[in-house]
Length: 325
Image (cartoon, rainbow, N blue to C red):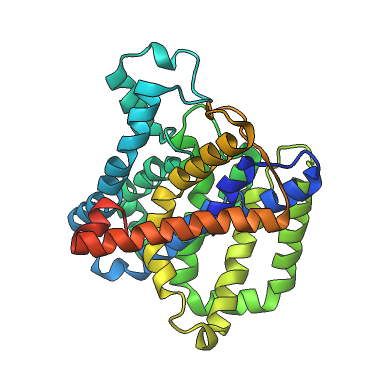
């Protein structure tokens, strides 16, 4: 839901309440940090059966293949019918096949899809990461200098997925370390939860009040939140039970397709309000507020989930290879 809300916020007009917009943006922007923490946690948790060849094949079938399939509509739109905003000035001087290649390498054809080229670098590093976990777990201490480095550098840079991978490496390693040292990790969070909460609050204030960067406050805020949420879920698991199982099952599919529904809603609202076809720039015709953000993001979530449910019924066991869920 955090990622859906993060990509929904720019579709609303926050000019009348910029502080509110920045507050919600601080809470949900870069929610992909949670994804990387969870990915690292699950990688270490399931590593007893790790075989690199089988691991790569599984990721190819359930991540890369859906990425390629679900990229097709966006690739057609942004190479044949209109230009993607925010691309390099020279980009559309390239032949179409090179445009497609650049889109796929960077994930720039849809806002959320940078995640796949970036996480793919972690898949390739899997043997090295597993060696650290099994042979020299004391190297997990490098999370601290890596966190400082990432907080200084920020997420974006000229090298696309490589910059993002460096930025997110401490989150992935933190997930692995927490899985490796579950009991110690839980005990430390229980003891220092107030410090983690204070860290998250201060960093949130830095984003909302637009303190000068560097440092970039999202990563330490979200990493502190990761630890607090894992501990909270651990303590409340008996109440949650299996209620979140379906959400977990379809979450990756929602991640893949929700941007299409955000775009569809924006095109529809621009046409209804202004009577014109959305041209890819602007389009914030709905006034931003907390209820409207929840309604907009909730609509995207419901439409995405419904699409996945229908697709799973139609595709059966093939659905994970096509829509990632």
